[in-house]
Structures are given as C-alpha cells and as structure tokens.
Amino acid sequence: AEVGARLALAEPQHVEAVVRELVVPRICAHVAHMPRQRRALLRALWGFLPAAGAPQAAEARIGAIKALQVELPSQELFLEALAHVVGHEPRSAGGPGLDDQWLLDLYAYYARVALSKPQPRARAAGVHVLRVLVHAGHAEV
Image 1 (tube, rainbow, N blue to C red):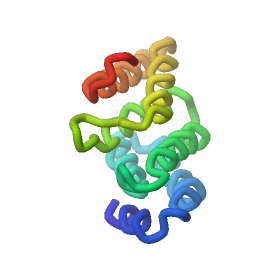
Image 2: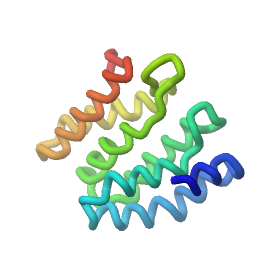
Image 3: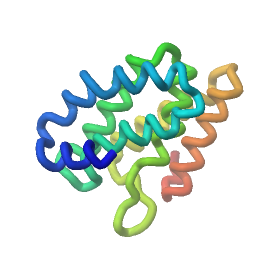
Image 4: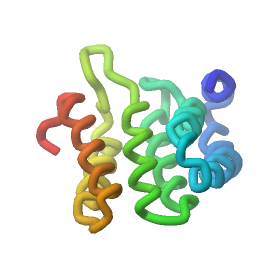
C-alpha cells in the first residue's frame, strides 16, 4: 500500500489508469480464488488510491469500485468486496467521514442491491455497508 500511496502523490493524474489497467485485474484474479486473502488484497488496492482530500480522490474510488464490478466474476463476489472496501474509506477531520455525496450514493445504491439478493452472503454484505455508512454519520441512507 505504501507504493500505491507514493504513486498517488507523485503522479495523481496517472493513478486511475494504473489502477484500472494493471492493479485491479491482477487483484481481482486473486480475490476470486483466495477468499481468506480478500480483505488484505482489497486493502492493497485501496492503498493505490489518492488520499482523502486529494484532487480526484472520490473519483478514483468510484472508478476503482466500477472496475471491481467489471473484473470480478460475479455480482455476489463484487458485493462482498464492496463490504471490505467501504471500511477502508477515510474518515473526515470533523468526525467519521465519507464526505463525497457521489461516493456515498454509490455505496448506498449497492447496499440496497445487495439487500435485494437471495444469497445470504450478498445480503450480509449489504447490511455491513449500511452499518458502516450509518456509523459514519449518514443515517439518511
């Protein structure tokens, strides 16, 4: 994650392309086949994203979420991955975060999608995402 953070600081304009074209496909291949390593792999992916407050930080996270959706082999696995990455979102200086409305809306949307699925793991992922959002001070979701 340290390498990703340094890249995000040094070359913020190239981070999204590097994440989308190089990092996400490789990490997703392992996420699909290594369930015990999912949390660590997704944490490493989030380490490549710009820090909160940096220009295009929210856009980079939204792009990474969309790339995960494309690269992971099933929607259930994507929803489980989302439950892992929501916990890696930075907190704001004034308290618990997720300050970007677009990013908040995206997480809330996928949480609702997850809750409508018949698979218990997908529903559990949706509940977890909603719990994190509410804990971050967004009870309106």
